[in-house]
Amino acid sequence: MPNRITPSEISPKSIFLNRRALIAQASAALALGAAGVQPARAAITPPGKNPSLPSKPNPAYSTKEQVTSYEDVTNYNNFYEFGTGKDDPAAYAGDFRTRPWTVAIEGEVQKPQTLGIEDLLKLAGMEERIYRLRCVEGWSMVIPWIGYPLAELIKRAEPTGKAKYVAFETAVQEDTMPGVRRAVLDWPYVEGLRMDEAMHPLTLLAFGLYGEVLPNQNGAPLRIVVPWKYGFKSVKSLVRIRFTEEEPPTSWVKSAAQEYGFYANVNPNVPHPRWSQATERRIGEDGFFSPKRETMLFNGYADEVASLYAGMDLKTNY
Amino acid sequence: MSMAESRPAPKELPRRRGPQVFGIPFNVFRAGVFLLGLFPLARWLVLGFTGGLTADPISFLIKSAGTWTLVVLLVTLAITPLRVITGQAGLVKVRRMAGLFTLFYASLHFMSYVWWDQWFSIPAIADDILKRPFILVGFLAFLALIPLGVTSTKGWVRRLGGMNWQRLHRLIYPIGALALLHLWWIRSGKNDFLDAGVYLGVLIALLGWRVWHAWRRRASIS
Image (cartoon, rainbow over the protein chains, first blue to last red):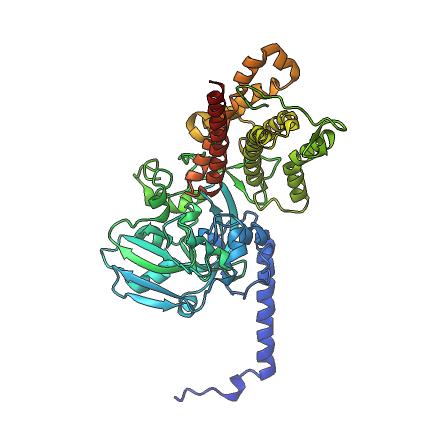
């Protein structure tokens, strides 16, 4: 029997178009409904400062806490390559070159490769995730990041059985980064994660914030975000990922091992030698007339990540 | 508070039309120094009303008060060398004001820490002082400043007697060293000693001048 569609079975074009419009209206209504349920979402209006970066919200990995203002997120940064002052990155990162940009993937992998930023942007679906960020200095923010799990990239490189750690290396542009002319740290800035930490679904390869591509001062064109660790673990302007068998050296451990550790998990019970980590000041919220808020173990992501450290002494592995 | 000095050498004030400092009538000079002393406070107010206190105003104000305490302390220490070098005897009369400004900014630094950083929690503050050497030395420097402020009046100079008063006020040297150590340990975490190094240089220069000056005077006496 010939499998033919008779003309009577085909919808007239007008009805067909009408149906599409109906679906669009329904989705818009659904989206509005969702927005009503999550007031946090309404706060994220792209400020129009950078090209937009479309993404799908991932409420499962988003906090509903009040989002820190774009102004504060982009003007209060630790990015020593541009200077040690909090306002230095916003002031001096303007000339930083983010194109062309490549990320080299090497070490204990089946498929070492160098990927261009255009390919990296297309590698997986972009999600918006609203994460808490806790700086080791005792302040915190809530930031709407855009990116996809770092695991997506790692899987493509096919790590070998020897890959126990991931080492990150970040950009050094001597002509555009005034901070690297001073030996405050040993440049380039390097960091690392244990393989299971790097593969954890919370660990994000971020390309944007607030609906737009990353501003230079926040680590353009791509960075790591590890929300349960102190901010210095979340490297900016990533250029190299190396898979290793041994724990890789990290910049702050090299600089001050008595103050900073490889794990650097947010932990209110393990004080920094020079200050307590029990409380934190949420930027833009905790002001002159309210006490600092309590810091949460693993920055509030204990349900997701505590099992990674089962049996480990967090006081010695700080 | 005042600088210690082994033997104050009173110089004659210029005679015409009342006392002057650098050719400025003393009262005008003193008012100018007073206004200058209020500059950091005025700056914070202006920054506060123009949104210039950064995204973390509390951290900014605590640190800024600490920085200005050290700056005003160094200015206070510089008054006697300046007086001797320039021969402007009237300078000695603004030394107490400068010292009291040091105590004023130190108090603001300490209170901002007690209020905004520790939320008046005495156990938390005690724990911080005992656990952290940089807090301890800063706290000791602040405590030691208080008797200097209290005894800065003429009545106290009389009550203590010139020698004892001077001995007490020599505390300003260890206070300066402790304050600098406090900053140095803060900066050591970030391996960035640029500003602390400048302050250290100034402190060494001011102390060095005093040692040299005392030695030269002793040599000229004997």
